[in-house]
Length: 233
Image 1 (tube, rainbow, N blue to C red):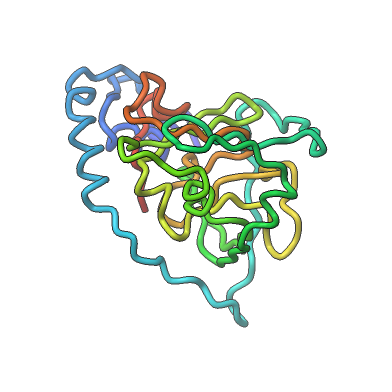
Image 2 (image 1 turned 30 degrees about the vertical axis):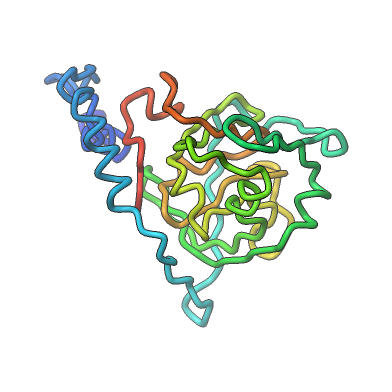
């Protein structure tokens, strides 16, 4: 692929579609003030279109196998001390939580085989196992004023979701992949997994879940560079 061919990658197209960026004749990215103005409209449209319906799971067979994930990381694979690991759930909740992995594994187990779709142009069929994020939020007791959920990762990555997407029945905090413990490079001990969002929304190495009543200035690592915030599939 030539330099000219690389100017408009799949990531760049998503930036343009999401509103907020445009390109000059040389392919250089420029911030688009008009795109920034329409971004709230895109967000509200995405929320309005969200359904709590289940995405059909994929049945494995002669022509369908569990795939491998391409390893992408914000700043390398962090080293996490599992003995001292605690998932913190704070913000607009009645009962803040600090959950060890043993605490999380005692919660009802959920497994699903769905497609993981990356904006870079690849996809993989993956078996995810873990706990429904909605179960954890229910234990914490989300306040009526809550609208958004922020995720903080051990490598410094950050992400935000609307509350309805976080409570979707197929949104998991996964600790298992393809019937085996989740590998460190794929986000162990905990990562987001959901068939309703593009891959860059599915944070790895999640250490904190913060429930809020408004979006903060920093919406997400890639979103702050112009990518679509809702990123639904």
